[in-house]
Image (cartoon, rainbow, N blue to C red; front, side, top):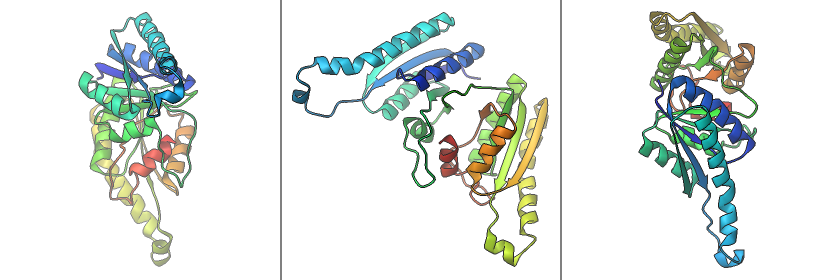
Length: 273
């Protein structure tokens, strides 16, 4: 499924953890690995630094992180290239991924920098939003697990694509496949039409059917359709992740379905957060 993987490293604890998880996946997939470290460009006045030794000291942590990552990848018996770049991390990671023609980009996600009112601005989220290939984000202290996969679904075309990828992964690894639709019920509409909840529920059932048929055709070991009503959507999805002991969430970063903006970019970003 994945033959070429790019792993971004920067020497932080989150990056080292994500690296270990990504290398295990690369070994299982027998994928070649491109390691990338990006030194943020210094835009200030070099005279303020005194001499160029300060610039060298800025590069050293990234050089060391790259060298350590390369040794770990080699120890796993993987084919590996290591690239040190300088500039905007998002731009450089995406360019490197395109040039190496990788199938998936892997990054660690630092901490829980999130507010319902503030868009996620991390490198991880920006790469996920802008990448044209799959992106695997691994949060701190969480291990990648393929026993149970969750696919949030809103009926949109991008959500269909994500569901197909989730089905392929579940078929490859014998995973439990959870297909989850979460709909928001407009209070004003409910007041005027008490049967609105059932209409939304029935619509969700109808939207899921094509994906469930596809999953059954792949003869997945266990298929679990889930339909919930709740606000905000990302919080309901987070609860489902905990309830079902989900090891991997497969979802689109864009798309608007027929079920009241269930899995748009903001929901994805907030779930990432």
